[in-house]
Amino acid sequence: AQKITQTQPGMFVQEKEAVTLDCTYDTSDQSYGLFWYKQPSSGEMIFLIYQGSYDEQNATEGRYSLNFQKARKSANLVISASQLGDSAMYFCAMREGPDQGAQKLVFGQGTRLTINP
Amino acid sequence: DVKVTQSSRYLVKRTGEKVFLECVQDMDHENMFWYRQDPGLGLRLIYFSYDVKMKEKGDIPEGYSVSREKKERFSLILESASTNQTSMYLCASTRARSWAGEETQYFGPGTRLLVL
Image (cartoon, rainbow over all chains, first blue to last red; front, side):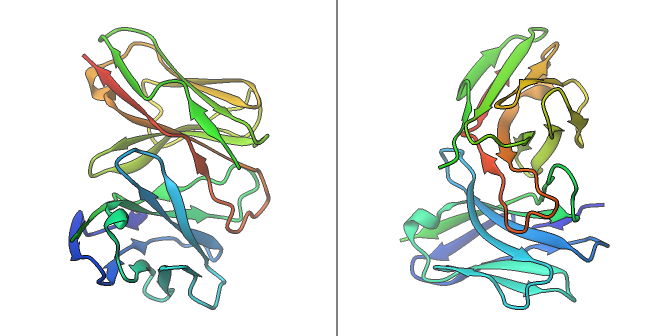
């Protein structure tokens, strides 16, 4: 079963608008972490934001915020005041555990975001 | 800053060739990972390693092997390349901690492999 689901293959948004990228996850663990990454056309993966399962506040990093709804198992990324440079692929990922060894990540399918001028 | 480098950005190989993809990290990380990325499938874990000479299969290990002789270097090997291994390959590393919190994985720039 898919552990991370991103249902929006592509999104088109006008510059300066806010955008929400959806992510739902499936886990039976109580302790887990959720990540969002940005991948520009150059290919590198850029870490954006993290939310721990026990964090009571929604995570924020500059223009990025994570709308964490634990009961619904959703972790949507919100980008405020979008910019042309936000055009990229966006991946949601989950780390299950506490993990005694390697911290493996499971990734969603990705959403390609295009910002129109 | 953490730096993860991969030996090639683009690679073109023939079916049946043995292919080596090299990854090096400079931050003394214990854990290293190899993923492949395909459209509509996201990133899928091929192999990972949590120590020198240690390796664990990920979700899609078939057709691949790995080698980790030194802590900083993790190699992905395609013993006999096939066209269905045409993909983007990403290497990543992270520190080993019992519960890492927001410790992210650090990624290399990726290798786009084309098998003809």
